[in-house]
Image (cartoon, one colour):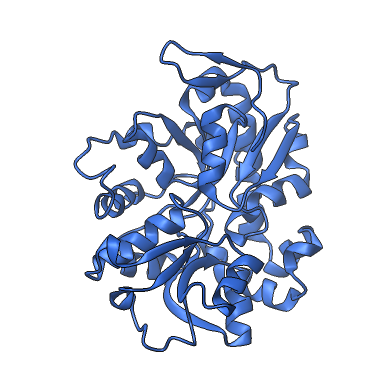
Length: 332
């Protein structure tokens, strides 16, 4: 874990990042920088858009979004590249964070099933299985639990196994440590290419997500502690400017052109597969960073479907996101 930045203790006892000047570094931790669902963060860095805004942004990576969330709450980072659903989940625990740029309008996740287990034909067959997630308490865990409950499987009837993504997820499938699991591109394409897994539930498009979850499910976002945003509106606006500019770049450039900007190691030796997956999945990115209409309500309904933490709680969705900064971003 990262060492804590200098912090002040609030009256509530919570830690807040030290008030920073515009010249201070802003650190954003992403739940897997190499994943295509989080591509806009590294792309913004590679295009120089953070620097164009006069920002010194450091990007860090963690295998699971829940670990990044922990660093934010500890005050060790100022922002997280992670799923919006954490904003809802944390409010139920009395902690206020908000999405300031909504990057994805679909999760971009896929529930894969090992081809060694043809008996698993839908989430209704999850009973008695070990299911891979990036981390316990992660968004992949949230979505897996929801799908199981939706199909009549109780939470205690299967085991969630934290296996990360990429090579560690693939190894877990190969070694039969998990029989199915939720992951993203490029891991999905790697396993489909070798024939070691097949798609069970596809959440890579808005249409498929609506069919599986009942509505639009906003996923990847830049979320930050509300207290930090309120105290650093100028810096937050600059971050929004840079990321919205990147979202426009994604919508106006080909997957091939975008892949040229990414670190070569992110392509995991298969540029053709990476480009195809990105071309197929580009529609998951919002064009402007604005929260999709009805999205927060879907997220709340999904979490309420299985989470004892959220079920029955009064959640003020208006405090889980803001469109103020993305709507003020330059139009060109």
